[in-house]
Length: 60
Image (cartoon, rainbow, N blue to C red; front, side, top):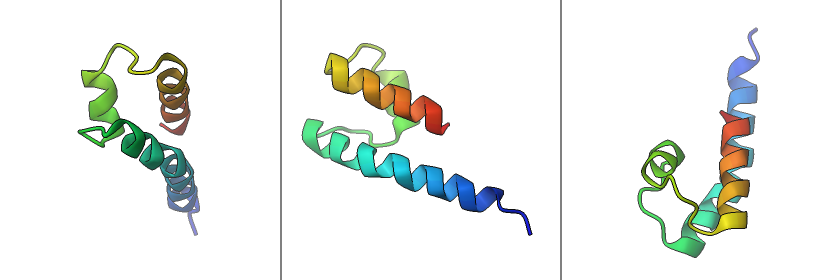
């Protein structure tokens, strides 16, 4: 049995525990990280934005 889907879902859920509160704090739209980071090339909040982008890149 292939375990890749399991680890993919595990990584996505770990990222979501950080991403969803980040979205709520900054009242973000869109909430899709791929779209958000393409549209918002400049940091919204330097430290938190850069940390979230790093987490997202690691998850990808």
